[in-house]
Image (cartoon, rainbow, N blue to C red; front, side, top):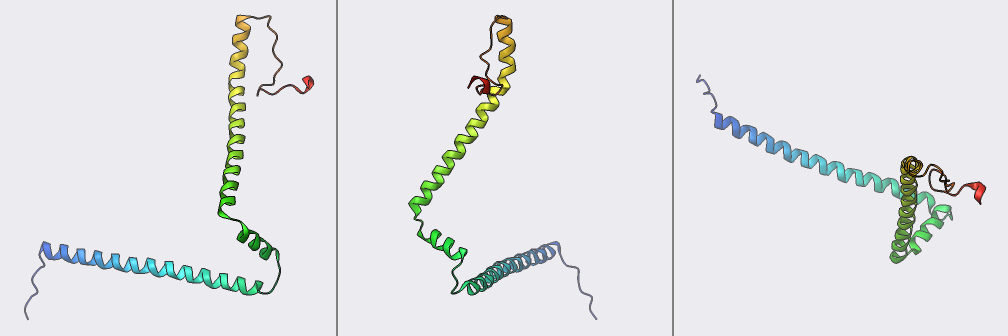
Length: 133
């Protein structure tokens, strides 16, 4: 019986490289299987939901019809409108925060320059006092 010779460094490296390539291929197959399986499961449950609503007038049907009637130009207009309102509200909040931040410093400097000066009776965040309204 003949002894098996030791493998060379190059043979070991090639063996590891082949193992790595096989592992990569199996991982790709597994990821693809999981992705497709997930899509199939989602479609199965979505079909079950649609079957349960078949022939019935429900809130979901009304919402679905409303969403089907909306055109792309209206959607874009709504998005820009909501974005503008959100931007305006955030800017207002930031402005009030800045006014509050500078209020104490402004007050100290005004008292140094002219201690007899009366304030404009604005609140710390820049709003008019309720008494002045």
